[in-house]
Image 1: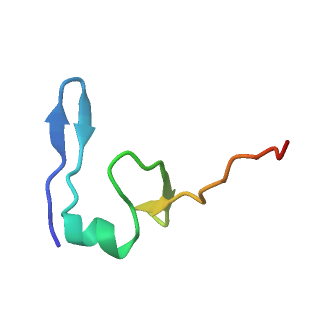
Image 2: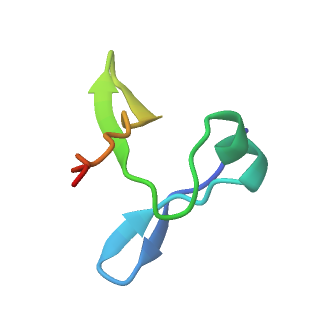
Length: 56
């Protein structure tokens, strides 16, 4: 898939089709990890950490 980097206010952004996000289990509002490896941008889901619960 080819897409364009777009200007949003003072930032730049990419739009992802719902089908792509579904395949990698990412939803709107989720945190993602962004890195550069071998000259390529890599975006992935972060490991979700569950909160600590107290049984009282």
